[in-house]
Length: 134
Image: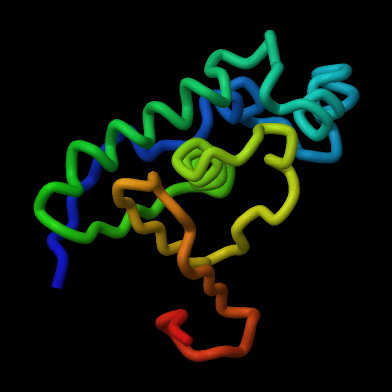
């Protein structure tokens, strides 16, 4: 029952623009050291046109702009969703590469006086019904 609103702030991490047209397996040859840095320390990539923090803030801005009407659902790419998930819940960037959301997954966040917390996670491969409720 939600209206669909297209917001350019939900686009892929600008790092992907730098790597556009390069097959994942060819990145080490085409952009030496960049894939390894991305996998080891995505929070510190001087070659990226957008930092992890800036990407998270961009998505947080989209959320803030649209949430006043009530609950919202955002759809984006894996790294932007992971970045705003970590940013809003206060998780350290060092864990960014672990526990990334799967394809078609749903992450439910709730905010309150104590901050924002992740209350549910669901993905199609889990074999449990949607929505993710106890």
